[in-house]
Image (tube, rainbow, N blue to C red; front, side, top):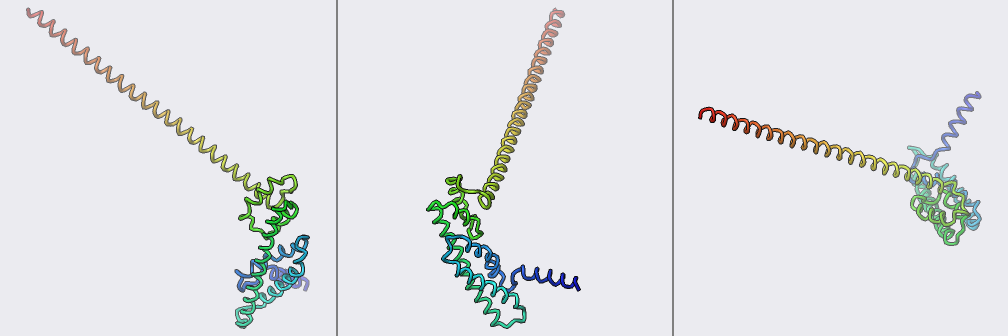
Length: 227
C-alpha cells in the first residue's frame, strides 16, 4: 500500500510539474513565466500592481487546471474556451514584460542600481537584446552593483570568447610564422638548387673548354710533326 501511495504521489508530482500539452506553444511561455511575474510583488516599485499580479496568478493556475483536464475527446467549446483564455493571459504576460522593460529604462535613467539589479535578474528582461545596455550601465556604476547573476554570466561568457579569440589569433600567428618559415626554407632550397645547377653548368663549360684546348694542342702537335 505504501509503495502504491509513493508511486501515485510521484506520478502526480511529475504530472502537475509539467504544462498542459493542449496549445502548448501558447501556454508554455505563460506558465514558465508565472514565477518570475510573481516575484515582482516583492519589488517595491511594483506595489501598485500587486493586486493585478495576484489576480493574474490565480487566472493562470485556473487556466492550467483547465488545460490538464482537456483531452482528445474534450468538447470543442471547452478547447476553444481554453484557447481564448490563453490568448488573454498571453497579452497580460506580455504586458508585464513590457512593464518591466519600461521600469528598467527608468532605473537606468535615474541611476537606481538596486532596482536595475533586481530587474535584469527577474527573468522578464530580454537580456540578449539588452546586453549592451546592461553592461554599459554596469561598468559606469560598478562599485554599486553586485555582478552575480546575468551580469556575471555576460562577463564569464565574454571572457571565454576573448580567450578563444586570443587563442585563435595566437594560432593564426603561429601558422603564419610556420608558413613564412616554410616559404623561406623552400626559397633557400630553390636558391641552392639554382646555384648547384649554375655551378654544374659552369663546370661543364670549363670542362668543354679544356677538351677544346687539348684538342687544339693535339692538332697543332700533329701538324708540327708532319712538317
